[in-house]
Structure formats: C-alpha cells, structure tokens
Length: 209
Image (cartoon, rainbow, N blue to C red):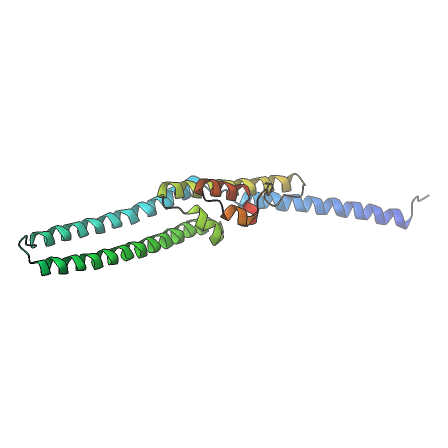
C-alpha cells in the first residue's frame, strides 16, 4: 500500500532539486576561487617604483643640463656695467624669476598628473579599479609614500576579496566591504593630515568604491 500520495512526491522532488542546486552553487564558487589568482601587492609596488625611478632620472638629467647652461652664461657676464644695464638686468631677472615660478608650477601639475596616470595604470594592469577621488588621496608628493599607499590599498582590497570568497564557500552572504563606516566621505576629504586622511579612507573604503 502506497503512503503519502502526490503531495509527498512533490516535496521529495523539491528537496532533491534544492540539494542539487546547492551542490552546483558550491562547485561554481570553488571553481571561481581556483581560477582567480590573488593580486601581488609587492609586485605592483615594485612596478610603480621602477616607473617613478625612471621619471626621476630623466628629471635629474634635465636639471643638470640647466645648471650647466647657467654656468656657461655666467662666464660671459661682465662686472663693469652701467646703471641702466644693471637696472635692465634687474627687471629682466624679476621677469625671469616670475616665469621660472610659473614654469615650476606647471611642471608640478604635469608631474602630478603623470604620477596619477602611472598609478592608475598600475592598478588597472592588476585588475583593480580605483576611483579618481581615491587615487588623488593615494598619490602624494613623496614617491615612497605613494608606493606604500598603493601596496596598502592593494592588500586591503585583496583581503576583502579573500574574505568574500571564504564567506561564499561557507554558504554565508558576504559583507560589502568587511568594515563599518564611521565617517562620511565629506568628513574624510576635509582631514588635513595626509596620513590620517588616507587611513580614514582605507577604514571606510565602501564610501569610495
């Protein structure tokens, strides 16, 4: 004599289907974890340091050529000059100094933009997408600190990805970032100290992702 009927057959079929679906999901997650290799933060930092060193070498060479040119021009200057000549030279010097300051400002802007592009490219080559506002906080005037910031951000992102993968394999719903937001984006941007601002940015990564 058969016990249960159509209702029990349907429930048993549903349970079997759920088990099969769960098994397929676990296998898919495991395959994704195996296929994705972790990002090597140290390798990224070395790559960026190499590019920065090359840029510094070119800059030092240009400065050396400028100094040599100034030395040559100094040899042709005469100590016996009229008041008018001295006045004209002083005026010319002021104009030249003003131009030099402007040139330095432009060179600084160009150098920073290049550093931003270089750093962004290094991130992209490693499969990491970093928003421009975050990139602006990562890249600083000190190249060593910039490299350290890049490495710290890379390690931070990789840790979040690893935690997410582990939670998926454990059958739990992954958190968005693994950190609790304590500050607003505006508050972080208003932090004047560079290191504190970067730390706050890392602690509240979800605001900039």
